[in-house]
Length: 329
Image (cartoon, rainbow, N blue to C red; front, side, top):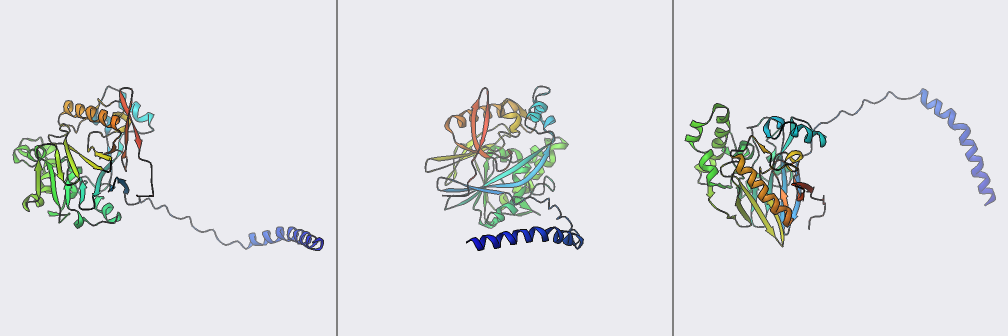
């Protein structure tokens, strides 16, 4: 053992003597520096999967769009800017557009279809997200629409043809009667005609094929999915409920757009609301219920994946995002 220790000591001193010279020699022979790796600046396909009892739900991103929320939100002067700043945000606010894909085991149901080509190049990614999540558009059995604004129905069709070739579309009759009406288009101001025309073009392939079904009251739209009318944001805005094994998910559509403002001040409305008073009342009513019963919530415009729970705080609410899980059971 004494001989081994002595040998190691001699080796240590020998290396100490050689290394400075070797390092200097390597420095002299150094190869040219490699170019820095270019930044990719491309986001991953937007999907996030979770379970509601035995039902598989996949949140889907259609992309984001910059919204001038300082001009769109109807709040006392200074409130929007102050709330955005408090959350390290600013206007225009990059806002998510989300859909949800529900696999009950018997049916594949899509809730909202994204913007397609109706909102420019930063949206229209929902079908890409569907495929990245392991599904194909032709596998979708049913599409339920929260309302017929372009960012929710634009992805239904492309070049006049149905994107989801085997799907039946379901929507509240009050929304269909408004958005698909020639009388509505004729009476609309010029700046709103594009949105109405977008809804007409997007729904036409399904209506022509007899695959547009409407409902007039709360109830099961398809097996495993329950509709609740929540008119106000549009004449026929609806929310959808999934229940399985004692768990509950409520997909609230456009009851909220800007979490940093409208959670703390739920009375604040947005210029997209067709009936601001009614939209405000629906948000307050449902948010109170959701905060009390602890249901899981999915939203169309909260930051992706936009799944969490509401909690009452003072006169407003807080948002608790769903805890990330890689273990789907």
